[in-house]
Image (tube, rainbow, N blue to C red; front, side):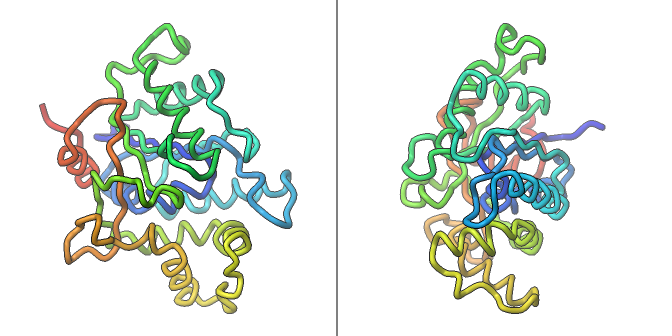
Length: 269
């Protein structure tokens, strides 16, 4: 099947594309675009009471369940230990292969220079370096090189809120429920590990009522759910996701990239 637009979101851990780019991905899937998520680690360190082996299996199951809510067609989880991701040639070649096989028009990843989680920075750096070789047939020669580099976007995360630039803002009101449900599937992170790390275990919903769980997710991850004044999303937009144009890859105006992400169609001409 031919798709008008192909997007790949490359992150460090299995839950991150859902919370930082899940709404955009769901909108694009609804418009016929092909969506792939790639986690460069298996997330096996993200807990205080579950061992690596069991957590690795659990997080994979959570990721595949979340993908169904968003409309992700392919979810690739690399078997690198959480906390050990490094921008090595081997990781770069794996990223090149993933991007090429998907024939990505747009790559979304993390910033590679902000403070915060070392794995997230490494993921951004791996993608940045992969794009340098994405059209070179002599690098990873067993996977055909792309004819042109993809557009690259950097998504916000918890450690770059102050430095992130809102170049492209996508309203996600129409799909917020699906984004929340995708996050909800990652119970090990949203209901266990994050509350433990950030000391808000007392806020975890006591009942299994979706209304209570929904409000909990919105309140405790508000920075990645709601449209802010800084985004300039407009008065009719309650929920939004923001991206910065990466200084690498195919260079387009923010308005052109926003049009692609809004319509699910490539630029004409």
